[in-house]
Image (tube, rainbow over all chains, first blue to last red; front, top):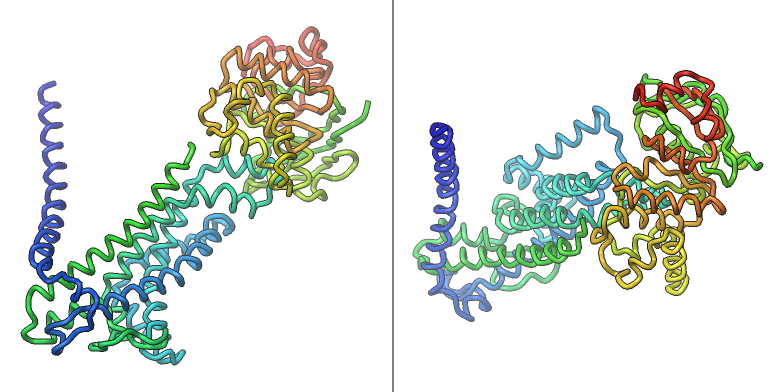
Length: 282
Length: 249
């Protein structure tokens, strides 16, 4: 008897240590970035263009560029991903080909982002002649986060109990009405979770935008979606490795802004999700 | 007597498993037909044929004749068919909506959006299902706030709100306490005046209490169909006798 309790205590200890092992590094990263980056944050840093070869001034164009790119990626990936997820979970038959497609989509989420970057370069920049532009970058990021959004949405749709579908159909609702009025509203929280994950990934990745949109130094705002743009992750890479003698606090300040931006976008999605969850009545 | 459903030589398979074997029977308008039998006897498959819910199953296959008012059900579009042939499920299954929205769900899907009309439907349906007095002051709250018995009567109201001609009850009281069961049975007896009712039940006594006629299914076959009194006092088949005496099943 005492033996089983001891085993339990040891198990708890290991579970606790594993959790600690995850929490501590994440906490440290946040603390260090805030500690070193906060002194750089002021109004000028957030709203000015980079000056003196990016050694002074602000990062406004990079902030705006990242926002454009993330918004573009979501605008492109969310509708397509959601429609694909609806097809896969509600309409497609459960046969070998469809299982293969689902498996392939799950695996696509694990493809290294630089591969997406090369793909975007070949398809959007060169073949479709969009050039290095916000359009190319957004589409590339969109394709990168599609598998995340499809997989999360599909799981959300499939977690809606079949009995709801049966009830709706038995009342004479059509299949589409059932999806539209019963299945989708109850899947929204899960779909938003996928969107949040995709959002964070799109904002933070450097490789997919490297060849498709990112400007090394472009001290103005983009004029249109066919324009190049600076972006925070790439800018961070540039001032950390390509430009000598950049003040440490500017580098950490940029990292902090990127972190807060992603956090802020996640927060918005989390609030929306919370509102929908509260409405959930089962 | 008007024949509502005319079923002849109905066979149903799921994959290679034969769920119904050569079932032939007529369902009369404004009767309560009880369908009894042990589990796996095909009774649920049988009523799910009447509103074509079986077709949701991937491996469903059938042959034979199923006619509603003389028309092959397979030639009637699904939505109008299910509007005419409503269904109450074994467990109370409110949709994740308010009481009001649950009741009018079907009506809304059929294009009724006028607020007064919807209110009228809600009041009429809830009264028909004998639950109006219990919920009239809280129509806006979630249907999940109701007790199990109330939920099931709400589901009956929801089925009635669509304006069906036939109501299929698929073991509607299997999750309910005796008092709720009595209330559901009471509604059935009242509804008989306007609707045709098919009641699948595992509870033999319930079949005896409410059914005008009773059909006994065993292993996918219709063993016996007769007036309820006849079935319960002098069944012709000894398998029927064995089942209602509780010897098996």
